[in-house]
Image (tube, rainbow, N blue to C red; front, side, top):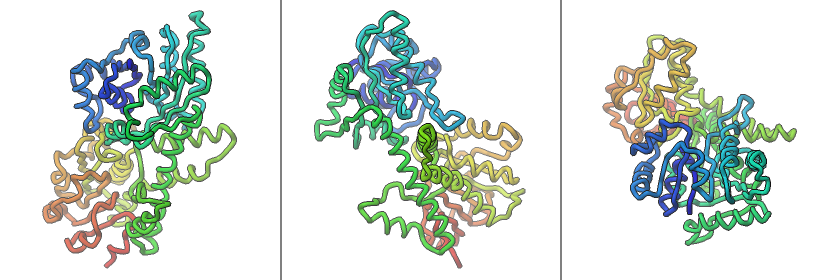
Length: 458
């Protein structure tokens, strides 16, 4: 099939590359010429394991093309995926300007039936707005009766495992209407996703608004589990319980399960924070308050300050003259995404209290340098207190303590003797509970985890 992907971010580029991998002829459109140049020169503008190989293989096979030519993109694809960004607006709602701009472009140039797929994460009712935008442009051209159908096909890709998630999905959600055009779109989408359903049916067919709602509901539930465990972890520190033991205890209940029950220093990224806010904003538009999600968001905002509070409790309010190492900058492993990353909050707190910081991340150093410059735009002199180490061990040199913010596998089994020797004080603040307190105690390391204080008392 001929497919057009509008937008080459995480979702668009992964979707386009993987659909090309299945033999489709894919045209990827982006308005950013520099990004298109990178892709056409054999590079990729994001870090995503396995993606570069898939892109290279399908470019070489002639099944994957990148361009800024809007008219050509509309002419190419019988199915047009809109996979552009929907950043949060000032009021927390999703900003649909790029989605609607893509829709208008389709309306300006289409000459035959098109299936328009909302792949971006969008609020309930967006398909109606996309349809109206296309219809308006068709009307301007005197083509009021031109046929098209807008369907919802939300993505469920995890950054760091996006290629695997796309190629081996646990579910495919598609929403379409019951009009003749909607049924024609159903047939096209069924054909497109047929390779994923050969073993067993993975597609859940529903109406458009339910599909749009499903994406927000899924991310809101996962965010809720994380904030729930973080709140319990903070209580565990006070009452003398081990949150890891609690996690195993409740996770063994099949009604609960083990996924997304890890306590830590807060979630970040492009999905959970934005989607929780957008769903709250949608509810307020219908005069409803989502009290649980409001609490989820507040708990997460507070949780990003937990490591900083632990540092202050140990070293005092004034950190002038103190130097700290930070391992992990990206919001999660296997990505260089710094959006809403907990590391940004911790680094900001430390340097604003007078400390200096040496940071290290396996892949996010360049992106971290960019976003930290923005974070300290109001006080650029503070950025001078942040240094970028070339290795985890270099970051430790002459540091008063180590803080771990991202759970990269490379951090899980360090040489603790070298670690102790490099630090001024053998102190670790573990924001992801990578290590066992008993092992730390036996190694002579003062250990501060999240919800594990009972095991670190003398």
